View (spheres, rainbow, N blue to C red):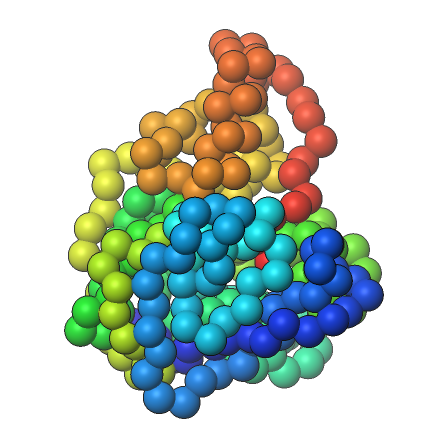
Length: 238
């Protein structure tokens, strides 16, 4: 398992973003050399945890629970075939492009060591928004991404800061004792909200937005969650 690339994006003004600033940092490119990764400030005020990476919509990006975003090269390969075009590392706005790591079946709260110092913790999966769709220029992209078997990729919290670079080894150093994976939490948040109460076994590790959604749903429906239905979420990290 290895880190294939570290990717950062500069703020760019575009017409398709959700951000009040009118800019997005989704267009991320691989960086040569070491990059510092550390916990950013509080949600809503903090930037990316990856040095040199722009965060423009603080509602859904940045902060301690979304310090970085990882996506597997293997899943980019799936999308290359489906979209019929090459996808370089960073093409999905990910900070970390991995190889050989099952990102989407990682458990919420699972920890990875990257290189010699950095330890990160999985907090959830990406829920796409209009910015992501506009960046890729694909109609119906939000639904298509949510329904794909390729998986959503993983949002990460920084446990131990450190420098990383392309080619660094990646190791799973901790797996919590529950069965909530990135892929299962993503399904609960987008396609089958009756699953949300079950996700609360991973509450102490979950990204704050997904946790709030799960708690709100559980409080509203309780034991009747399996028969309730709501419109899937369509805005989160992108």
